[in-house]
Length: 134
Length: 134
Length: 134
Length: 134
Image (cartoon, rainbow over all chains, first blue to last red; front, side, top):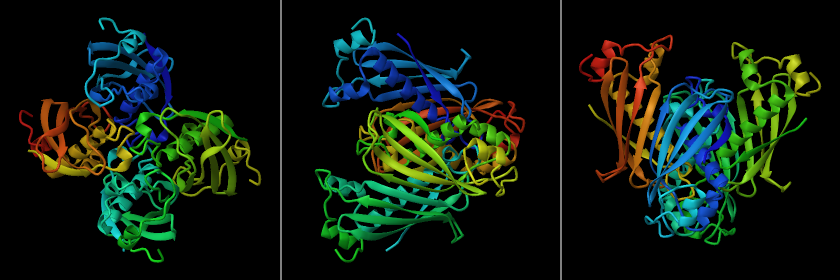
């Protein structure tokens, strides 16, 4: 499964070098995984209401070419299982009309239950997210 | 009572016009009122733990001259009472070593109690905040 | 003329009160006016390339009801002329499927030319933006 | 050489999970490296005026424990040379009074000259930054 979501770079995303500030890519990663989960049938706000949280435990991002003001970007998101209690989302971000990625990266997430303790990803979630081996 | 707090403009605050993006001034207003309340003896996190919330209901900001990367700013905050259930903070922001304001503005806040309903500002708070007429 | 643009509230927009942080509405105002100008035929990046800048000189926002995580919002933007060298955008922001505004506000902008000095709004712009009296 | 700089978490840094949103740590990394460079005698705005830019080409951050509203954090920054045209800053972030890191990470930077092309780090910079092997 793969999700592709558009994002338009705003003026507030840029910095004085004339390109998008590096922290904003992590906001775009969030947009990607939110839409991935919605597409999978688990809107993240519903997950939270069901007492399942996916806090980020690690992030990496590689910046190849800068995104600029008013660029229309695509955010491509995929998911892999790391263990019963951890998942990793992968992201590629690029310009509309060009398959080359400007930036790519990943986020690792713990799966927490209602008490905010590590908990195995619910089976129904694993199935909907297309994760094997659960 | 008056609070003056410093803030250093970071690269992530700037935009491609080479100046601080306009929304960031509202973050700086927040810094000002947080330090104002701490100085008054009511750290805002303590207020929240006591079930008192001050959500912003209105904001105005006038931008006279731009703040730039690495500028060391001062944020000056004062407070006035508007009614038993509403207060207004006033802010002036300027460059270190210069009393002229680059920007000024205010925020109006409702006073909410534990149920998130309008509630009169607790008397102990009004006293500490130096508000008369409560 | 009127522009209506959607925006999906992300997790990074929220704060620990469980609602969108107040400064983010100014980012949404920016989205609204950018799309307004694109609809009028003057994409803002093109304006900047032509040496015309519209820095914000003043903003006001009134917050009536909070926007929350994953809310799908509409941003409605209109424009009025204030003088030959200043314009004001008006904004209303609400939830999809509900015409009531959660928040509303305006931004005042100076019109600056290539030297970053006050300059009358170019006539071609005024016409495209639907402004009379220019 | 090592720089330690304080940062106070603001309300706008938090999200509805009640902790600092993950992208904000990259802003704090920026604060750390800015103060590192100032301490080394190369304020970054001066570097830019001299035509030297250090855009981020890669970032990694590991989140161990959350930072919360009003936490007073320390940001510890160190630097290593990777090649004549690339450096890496390392960061640890923790709570005042506790040497354990809540989060840690690094950023890789290219060294660009006035034309925004890869250029060897100027020798005077390498010396001030305490980098060997240049």
